[in-house]
Length: 172
Image (tube, rainbow, N blue to C red; front, side, top):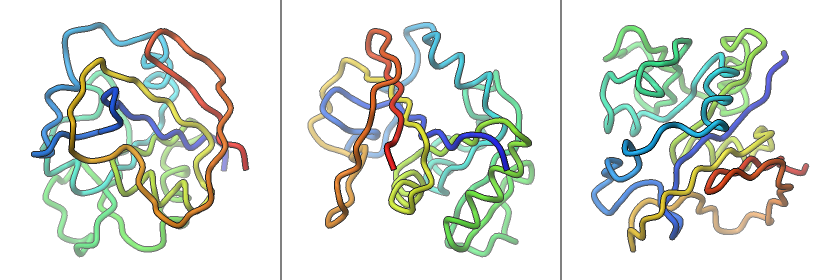
């Protein structure tokens, strides 16, 4: 398998990916995508997220529909219960799910996003890069970008920085 596993996320300045009501409206709109975001979109072959993200954004395609490719939804529910037919619902060990995502990416990158899927992927040593867009807003509370008590610190190397957009290499 080729391709890179990229954790692609937008975060508030105080470290949240969703507000107290799981609302994501604060993270969309208002500005043109950065060059880094455009690069991620162009190099993505498949997209892996959790069922919660799909619950929040519904049938919307990733990246506002400017990208097309395989969308895998990691769920604890029966994967045969597929509420959005164009998405593939998967379950099981995160290592197997990420391997399936890389196959679906067909040589391009696999983006993991949301709360649980990237955390599980990172904790399993599967994430190669983190691309993070920081929005200048303070939410005060909500869903944390990364919360994994008891794990060893993960060291990162800054690869690129463009205003409030960062690409990090995960050091393994």
